[in-house]
Image (cartoon, rainbow, N blue to C red; front, side, top):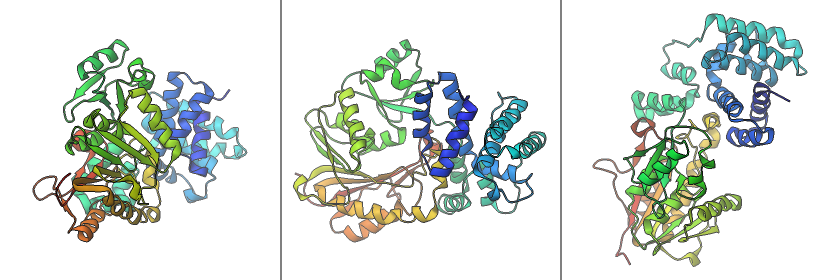
Length: 436
């Protein structure tokens, strides 16, 4: 049976070669291998940590190679990254264990001839400690320090300034807080916190958004009886802030056009009450099934789910008081929980605004006179955010008006440093005309 380090090596290789999603690969592997909580936690820290710190690790590894790092075979590179990560970022692991276990891993591959290289590089790394560049190029320095591509650091510096950029980068390498939204139709916030405590789970009230709680202890929260009984659903605080600030009214009809995984759907369903209705659409039938399962758990009966392409207008759906389109995006606001996102190719990111604009233009056809159209993303990228919204309002200024977030600020960026939550963006537009 393989130990956690060997399993981590296999997973990292899979992510590296096949582009697998680390969180999904981890979840299935932990279940398949039947790992206990300690082994699962160690494995998760290794895999996510190596991906999170990839550029920092590669910079340090490169210092002790005779040839460019890109010439290393993936198996050798993954082994070196695993060892270096333990040395630099896992104080609980003895250096000797990090080095020796890495050598054992490479010996079990067809590249066992590289065991001398692995041993030598990792010993030099342990002796010299973590090295960071100190050049005149601020973007390059930050790129290595926080393991983020230079082009993305440059984008943030230009768009948000140095202070916000550093706050985004610092948050990206921290363990993200876990937030949930209390099912207000079934339990009060204080009562839920007490129930969770009885199960050994510490949660505290968050006053930024009503009915928001933050978990102070880890573990498998989804295995708790309170979760199984449908007393809460997971939803990041930034997303909850959006749901609160659009102030959905009792009895309203809402269309959630890109609904999966469903956090906003569940919250808005509680806001409109049993007299209201949320119609949740998603193009992915499997993801809709996840929403369906959660609806049954939460016992929310005022939601209807349906397969639907947000980019194709369906006249038969009618009009709604509120139309929400949380569009597909680069996800640069959730790097802390999905670290591989930051390594997406820039060319792929550059194609997103066209799709996002198309969805927003399609969505506006579903809004009643006097109703609201909400555009949101979990990314921090002006091209996907402000630029899309300005292009939309330029075209539809006779039909829609922007409802400013505050004076001199039409749209809202939520930076991780503000609330210790995901990076997020949203804009609210109101359709001109009399509300029905």
